[in-house]
Image: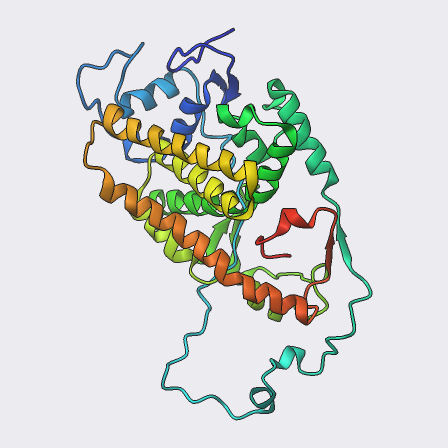
Length: 354
């Protein structure tokens, strides 16, 4: 098996950015290619380019073996814009209108809540479940059959040992929570390395830049209500604040991996019970030990509590927004705002669509 061309770690490895490399070197190159390390010289003046090297030298080694930035892809989801949220002063008087008197918004003022939607949009995700099952059964095919979270989870050794049913339960529970933090971290990284990046722009999971101010949200598949009202109803405020905190802390690859895993397992532990809960608690203990070893052994930092607390505060903020959005979805169900019917409804709990 061919070793990683950058760090020489033994295989098997995949084909990343034009060369055979391990996932760690590929992730480093993606984050460092447009960072300050690209213009800095060797930090230690004693780097051995075949074994150990600082970040600037490691980046130059990536370029030397043939890595290219031309095929970067950002597989991320976009989120709604919160910039246009209207802030109302506490001193403002509530307008005296009929909708205020009856306590129902104008968009559902004359809607018959007892009349169910006749034409529902059926979302069949059987192919996703089957695809993730194949990934779990054939880990050698990870590079070819890509389902983001399923692939990521399988790099956690303890997760790989679980029964198939438990794997699927955890995957269906955490995929949208994982994507939330993953997309925020991508936006923070992109904004930090592109200071002139407009705030009303975002990156889609296909790597396309979107101008949220000029994008029309077609909600006809989602609801019978006007798209503008539905988009405003589903929009979750405060995500920009999370992005700014991530940009300020600038977590390393290891720290971000810890945050993704800790957020996923803690959230799943609050939804799952029994043996799955015990397994997830065990996973979190392993994560705590791993991050301790990373700070004390690799970074040689003994007093890391303050930084770790700030990282955990970001995870807690994401979970808090999930809890705050639940009453909104319950209201949507009462007034039949959403006309979706899922083959696996448990997969979309807290996702913003069920």
